[in-house]
Image 1 (cartoon, rainbow, N blue to C red):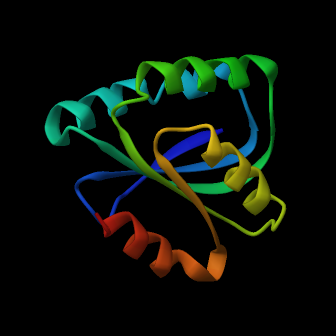
Image 2 (cartoon, rainbow, N blue to C red; image 1 turned 90 degrees about the horizontal axis):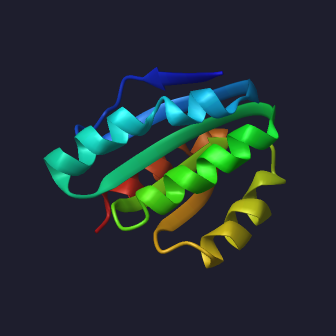
Length: 118
């Protein structure tokens, strides 16, 4: 399930990912991305990771969404409690045009600070 959360910054979208994620949920955030692109030019995201996994259609939707918004995403901060996310996100960051970084749960403030840096 994807839940949109209140953001501390007007230029940043915040979502919590929990349980298993399906494709329709990934596609449901596209209107938010478009609105932020129109308003700020670039999109910053903070993603709280509590996910148990994703279906194949969710992975496909992420790929499609990433291609559509490739030039409009500035940064994505991932916050979670599972250390194995860190190397996965670091590897993924090599293949993206935008910055992605993992933060542990106790580093929420650092994630917000990083998102605020130019």
